[in-house]
Image (tube, rainbow, N blue to C red; front, side):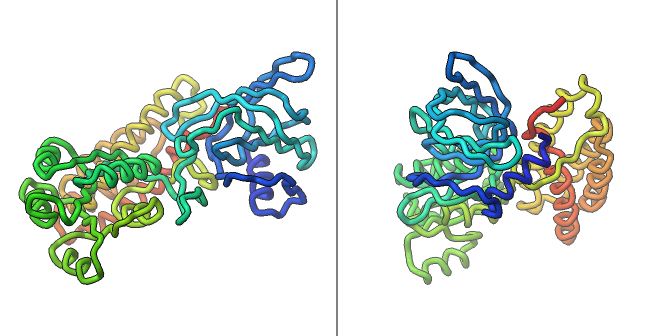
Length: 375
């Protein structure tokens, strides 16, 4: 069965338009697991061991559901290779707890893990409701955030939230170390506790500006609405209210960092014109990885209105993309380079428009990195 047919079946299952209905009582929420094909090794009754490439449907901390081309008996031992959001692989052991016919020779198999997993390592992102239960998905993000707070509780919570959606997070517990970090490292976003000692968050914000940081700076604040208004008037781009939970933080931070849609289902991949040359495929995949990094650089420059600096990165993308089989990316990169070459603040609107076009194309191209490698 090809990828398109598998996706159609998954869509029917997920929208409830299929006659299939699960009978079990689920004690854990299941999240869509868009990892492409995964490897499952089963030990069938009689001792026969077989390895299958299957399409996962969903994942929870206690189990996984996937499509399979034949019937499986309950209690069949399984070794499942899961792919994390960092594209690493881990082996998880479990047993079949259900096998339900869907259509033709296709069955949905449910496997219960022997030990629970940390589901946030595998799913693109999870949200938490007020009770702390996983209840949905949000888009993965890319970027580097500096979180400045004297509270270890806030630092550890935000570090977890940031990593769960794909961000790189660095934390600082003092104003002095935050100043040192901003001098030697590149950040897309800074979040500062309003009450940061010794002089407060506003004073630290001004010092970071003096050190040359032009990106957005958010205030962490547990005050009332008037406090929020005064912080915005002082120059903070946004306020992240305390106490914050995953959903609140993702909503606020997501307005200032790059969103990564390349791993989401429903996006049609753009293949390189050189893709049929199998010797070129590793080179193409390596190039796409570098391309994602260059897009992060451009996003950072757009957010900081560094229009003049974008031209050099866009020129680099234009020059390389054609050689790797992406002339359409090369063409849009040239348009971005022309829009940004003037270096004027007035050009930011045109630059942003061309950047969004480039991002859309590159997202579709990078989708290939997260697809199963078919012959």
